[in-house]
Length: 247
Image 1 (cartoon, one colour):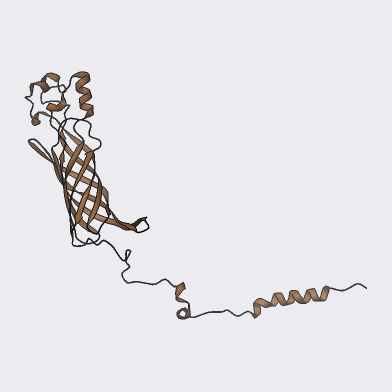
Image 2 (cartoon, rainbow, N blue to C red; image 1 turned 90 degrees about the vertical axis):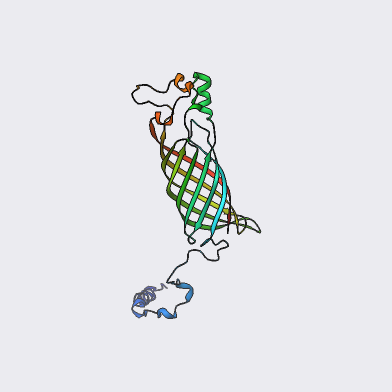
């Protein structure tokens, strides 16, 4: 006997076809939704909470060592001191004064030994003073060991200053960035990378009225003055690191 499956199949299809017509649209009032599904709203959002280190309204003093990484003629070494007043947790004013190393660099020593050109008789920068606006863009906590947390700030710098020679002071512009690592609430390691632009005497010069560069005889005479040297524009990289105290 052959069974007829046609009617049950038609019945199932009819039920499935009418189900969407029977379904009701479910809606819940917004205030009855679970709070976990709604992001909280703040009038003044705070990006950082529970700071271990607060700097607003405080001073920071310290010293540093460093080098002018792209100085070819003179000594690259630099040492000095710095101070910062933090207006708040973001804005501050930084002052730094660096004394340049004396003497000439390795490149000039090579010139002296190879061609006999002694550039130690020329004029190099003696010191650099910079006043910069400091903008702190990041504060964070670094977990180094299980019970050791290092607090850090990353900031940008931009400002004006002077580069001083024997008998000459010229205006300078600087910009850069830096980072501080606090290992206590008051002491921190500070590292700065600054780009300093200024005009100064060119040790390979063309004196007024003479169509030639610095000669060996003129350098050995010791009668040169800083005004004899033609001015040129420098863009130098100052990399420094030191210890600062926050109070």
